[in-house]
Amino acid sequence: MSDCLFCKIIEGEIPSKKVYEDDTVLGFEDIKPNAKEHYLFISKDHSKNVNDMSEKNPDSIVHVYNAIRKFTRENGLEESGFRVVTNTNRNSGQVVFHTHFHVLGGEPLKGFGA
Ligand code: 5GP
Ligand code: ZN
Image (cartoon, rainbow, N blue to C red; front, side, top):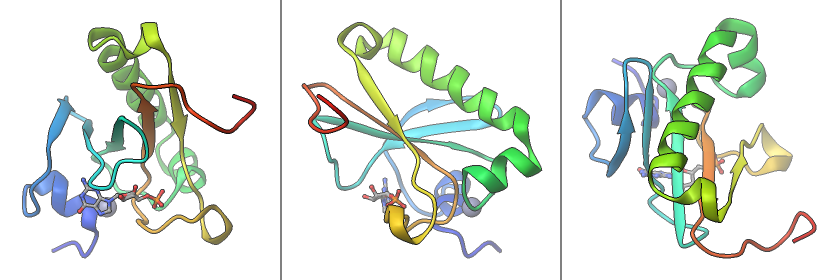
């Protein structure tokens, strides 16, 4: 039994508002959105952060980005614009140690030169 919050979401032990699912990737709404639209995309294969992911299962990064492309294309976010963020360890503010890609959009986003 995994102690990881996002593995529990994948297994359906903890509910989530799913927006995308395929064999290897899950996308769901962030519980505390930082933008009008805020989703989290994760691989079903557990890793701690993006460096761990690229070392253990580099294909899963491609799978996650393919899922993000399909999802953002289908729901208008590609056209209006979106941002992908992944936090790694303490200084980034990472709190959930199952690699996740924040997908933010639905309104003009501040920061990063915007
Ligand atoms: P981090 O800071 O680790 O990059 O981001 C973790 C994200 O997970 C945060 O944006 C937080 O709101 C989200 N989160 C934490 N717990 C849950 C949960 O139980 N369900 C969902 N849907 N999101 C969560
Ligand atoms: Zn996990």
